[in-house]
Image (cartoon, rainbow over all chains, first blue to last red; front, side, top):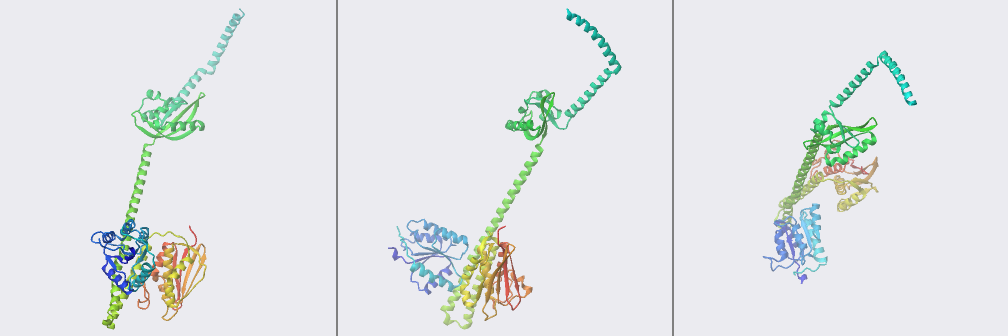
Length: 147
Length: 411
């Protein structure tokens, strides 16, 4: 049943970034739908299947910003890795921070990859292209279930 | 019977001897001389007694059993006892019970070495105890050994020492507190830098991204001037991003504590060259490295940054159309290594050799040679933080030779 879930959960509070990331996905012709939540709490609600996301489908990949309202990306990651049914879900951190403290903490908490948002759109398109190839096509997924 | 006779005889003899003696005594004035001798002894005794009694130091004398045999007025004043009370004590009864062992130890040393100076706490009649320095020695009268001790109350000195300790603790607390404050300020600066890197760059991504979107999606509806404007937005946003990144790198360098360790310049350069591959292919730059390069005392990440700034400059500052040529080598002398990065670029006039290392100093317009004016400031600051130096030798039109110098061993 897991293979049906091919959406990408984008946890991003900056609406400009959401638009640009979506545009980059279009340019690379990625068919996977993008579900957007705007803060850490919404991300946890979505993944846990709480109101208003009771009917949600589990994503195949989480793109996680770190600096978020309510709950930070680090907190979301920490929570996620403690959920028996969700802990294998691949998480790619996509953030503006290149501070080594942020990078190290993210990996300590179980991030699968860490990408720094580039300023130029062309670089973002390149990044999304590689992300698609690696995480959505090549990468062999583990079982992630709802129960 | 015979004995009686002898006695009788000796009586006579004795009598006559006495008479003779008497004559002698009178003749030599012995009576008077004896009296004089007694007087002399009494004066001497009084002299020493008053020396002992009126001494400004408190003095006690006890025998080898610790029984007090004598003391002077000063000592009685110090302890608050009268003479008869004090004479009834053994010395250990006058010492703070916790310190008895200490006194016994001092006595042993005293008896084997003849004298000893030590500190011990005494007990006064009123129950108060006071710290004292005892300077004691043994002496012998008529074959019997005694111990005398001079007692100095060192309460004041102890108080001063205590006070000094208190001040020191206070000072230590003060320094610790200041350090905490400085650390807090440093943390604040860090979070400021973090916020700059995150928050300032977000709008830049939007400017760059949407101006790009205009250029692509509305290409047919923008005339060449409109397209030029959009491109200017893109390049200004990119420039500002580089500026922020450089400033962050510079401030991080000023703030963070570097822990120099032995770093292989070969491995640093390998990393930098890998990073420059696309640039080298684009410009057709020839980069020649004379290996092996030495190991130096430095910080790996900082050295990568320093070398990449130097190589970037060497490739960048050439006459238009000229293929950059860069030569990199090192020389070792007196425990220091100097790494040279020599280029075939436009060169720098001598009057600018210092200025170019200052932050935001630029000799060229951004149009001809893009940059932020932070690169060489990072080189200089980085070298300073690693305990090294940086400099340049250059003649306009004949290229530049930048160098960085670091120790090759630990302290």
